[in-house]
Length: 77
Image 1: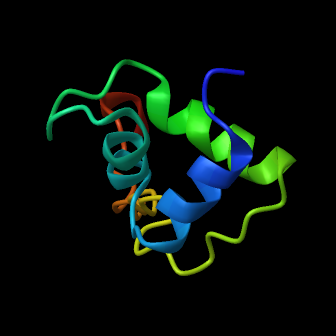
Image 2: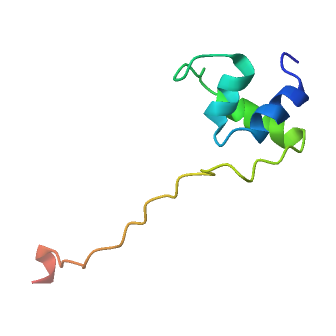
Image 3: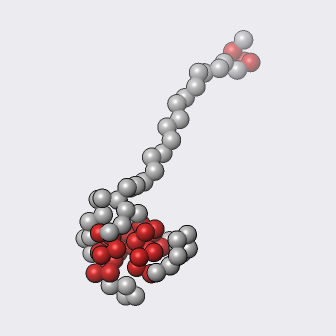
């Protein structure tokens, strides 16, 4: 593996987002995450049983769409 679990654990402990973990482990500048990199590091953390419960955002909540009033069609008249 390219990155050791200890490197990932140290980055996770001092970070609050997966993007921050990526930057700390890889040394990449901010905004230069590779596609799927956050998911990769999360998967590695889960497999290594690294605690990331302190992260700010787990997942954005889905918008709840309330159904509007039922409007009868022309055939109802």
